[in-house]
Length: 262
Image 1: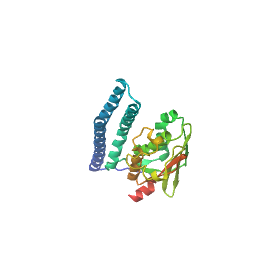
Image 2: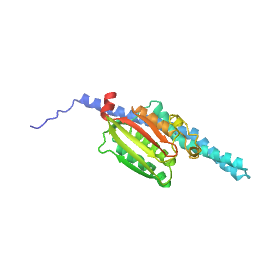
Image 3: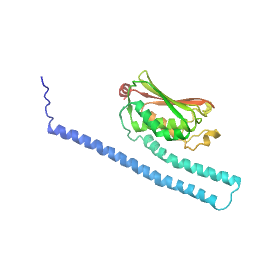
Image 4: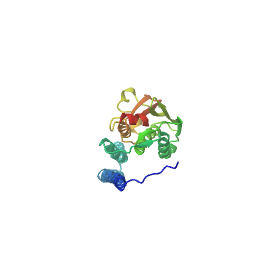
């Protein structure tokens, strides 16, 4: 027979509407607070950094510099550029580390990986780097914040490109094993020495390797990636052979596991 759906009582309907309205309001307030944080960072950090960079440019125009002065001025400009770029990442790190709410929805990691690949394609083309994927199909879903997890993959890919060898290949591998989802990003690049492998996730740490220091960067990408994964009940680690390449691997619980563990 036909199924008859009884109308819900008005009080129940109003309660549901109130919950939806409250949820939307909270999301708008959180977004507003995040935008305020971004504006504060832009004003309090990026403006003075831009001024430093601008004055460094002016110094070069007023009189000749000796070799040491030119070298130090170049370092000032590189550092200012590095700080300017890192300001946005710092906002995300402050937000996640402060325990601010993240989205909690069902996510399909292959889609997140493809979106991250799109964001780094311009710099990959610039370095003549090809990104190859090997992704299990189908893949179980994970639970979490899609934007933040895309940031994790983005930073791993960006590192692989800028610290890899030009005209080479980066391989992303994703698979499921024992109710967990794994993703690895492997490059053939500078590599990391054994005594630095545990340090590269620390805040603002940059390798002593001069080849690394020549690449602009703030040293916050891996810290942010680890912090985001911690908030998702995941983990990240690296394996490397110096002068041959590095593989970063992270793991997340599948939807069934993440629900069971909460």
